[in-house]
Image (cartoon, rainbow, N blue to C red; front, side):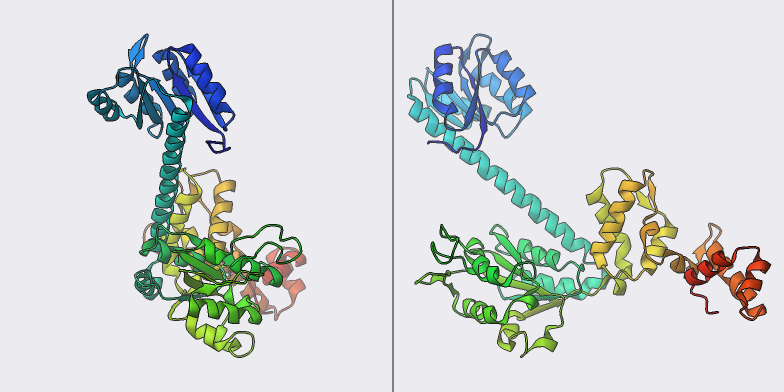
Length: 451
């Protein structure tokens, strides 16, 4: 097989019908869908209607010259690779074709093996360009994320992250669940000198104890029941890049010594293996636990000190509510394409909330608002727990600059005064307020009024 089995699309634009059919028969079996066109106009129509990865383009066509056709093909997809084919080879011809946008140049006559090699190289170039585009997008995204999460409440965190990005020392990131520990780790990686290398992660709390070792270090064929083939571990997959160990505090203690040895010696051995392999991997770890309280019991002291060369703590969202407006603006752009904003009143409620789920909870609330509220002004606070108690403690400025009480504040005050005057008698208070006893009890619970 000269080409990958992954389905790819190639267009042959050549007035030689016999040649086109021969190419189609030869390459279709190698995982390439080959489509044919005998005229330039037919070829352009096909390019406009569907995605074409590679074009084999003849120089002389009944209705156009191949040189002039190259730019028109690339208008539909600038990533298409054009292999220029000509029966009149010359240096000037080749230069003209490359300048017109051709990827490769073949002189007729050539055999199908030579064409297959040129096609394979074109697909390989296309694949590498696509991978680079994904990596560039990911790097740009992580850089943007690192800027957004780096509000005034994270000034110290961002300063440490910048320092960590230019070094290759181990990093330990701490913070509550949902604060963005993984995002900080990715930001450090993609801002560092190994940003084109792999970023591989594992959650130590999500896998059974007997699988973590196999995932980290890999295994040889026959190492255990079901190991029919050898498999690389995450250390090998992250070669030259970063291995991120999330929830490191959940790692079984008997594996911690093996991890420490890998960090110290930069060598690993697969399960069932008899030889060691050198690895060049930067380790970053994260935990939502207070590891200091577990040292010497469920977590090794020596591993803790080895991991925490650079220690970065991410404060919870409730301690940096000033970052919430910027976070909301960024998250909404990633959630929806439509123009939306949050009212000043709702933003005040969001900043008053204690966010037990941190940034993850904020994103969830915003997503629910976007998908359930069709207008341009969102009210995500409707999905907050204890919303009414928040409203009761918030006063909102009017457009004239005056401060007035909310309806909930007024209602709470009226109920409180009535209960005080009637010495806590619920039945008499309900009658005096012209509401049912059950409604009064519900209001007392909602407003946390002490009877």
